[in-house]
View 1 (cartoon, each protein chain N blue to C red):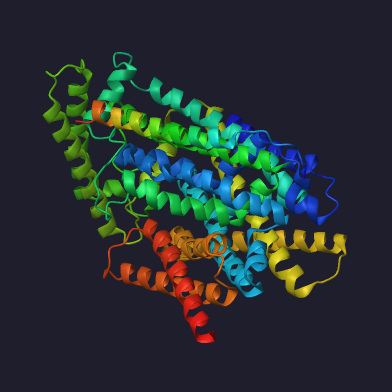
View 2 (tube, one colour):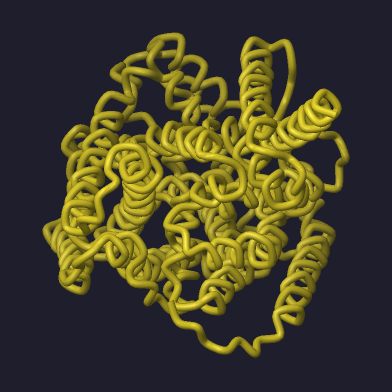
Length: 37
Length: 558
């Protein structure tokens, strides 16, 4: 197991992932409203 | 199936087995066998996590589910990214700090050996049975549609997995899963291309989606707050969060995938990879099913997709022939409307919907009539829809590739399961209770033997699964029956520092008994509970029982 120095901004990753989830849900809501009768 | 299809299928499967065995032939000790010497990069971990979760039935059932019920199933995955973040923050650093082989080792550090053994035992029971069904479920569909021998199909899948999992251990599982995912996605894109090609040229892609929408297949988000409704935004976010937290955070078949990472950073990145790609991947697989539905608006689908599962001669029953004739007339009437579709409001949308509803009703009537004549007939045929299209409309060579996709998915999930079952038995039971020696070569041999043993058990369950119809149903929800308890124990361990081993163990037993009781009440019809709720209920009962017991014992002693 490597003890590499981790300079990753994990907070940005986590918030980015949540933002991506929110965008997907909004996109799916848009598709639902646009294409569903 | 042509000789060319057999050639593609055989070459693909052989290449996977040889690659996995060859690349990992130098395993010398338990560390390299169970954790792959912590050498995996983030991409391998991410793909391996996805491949373990996506079993063959995912690729057979999901398009069929979208064909029947539309895109709503995608909501089930909304809790997954949230679970990835929480595991990355709370679970992963602890597993790394303690350098554990299995998730359950941590529970001994935190509580005591009894809690560790109890949760490891729950995992072995649920995953051990599930491994057999992972093999059986695709084998029954393949053997029915292609006329293969069911027993032989189960044995071939099981033996191929055993060969490279035993020889190469965890690393072989991860490395082969990477290529299996590439084959799976390549095959699904090829299938999607041919599905779109089966739609007439006069119907554009947008019009195809519009048709699917008008017939109710594009309703992706459901905001209904009713908890009895299985797939809604809320059940996906809350129920899905608990389910995926337990599956990815405490199920050894997943924990083992990311513990093989070369660093904490690589493992975290693998989880982020899964969190980013899982929902789009499921969206694509569901969308394949929706476009398949559109393609079958212009190419007459069989009235039932699993006709081969019944022993009766369908054409010799006048009632069935009559329903089928009406089904055919209905299809032609619907097709005539759709061929005049130009996307504007003048189209006969109501007529179209009525004809689709009539088609669904005729299908249902036909299934009921078949079931009356043959009481062994299983009326749910959605698992057969995608493969029926593949073997009817795809060119030779690609049929072989798509069958390799199904085999790859079955093998990747089974390999992850066997690897995890062997690790848990070796580390949490054999090394803990039966062998205190540090003889690495002996431990390695035992671990390999246990992998073979679990593999043989999985094949045996697959070979006898057809005899126990209710067992299959039970195994399908088995994960949810035990996950709640296991997650509850882990949440107590992480977040409630004052709770000791005794309280956690009794809390876990109470939680497990109550979840099993609730499930029994649901089966007999006394309650109406979605299996997703078992995870939430189980976890909450374990946590509350643990806290109350701890408080009671503290007051008694003071």
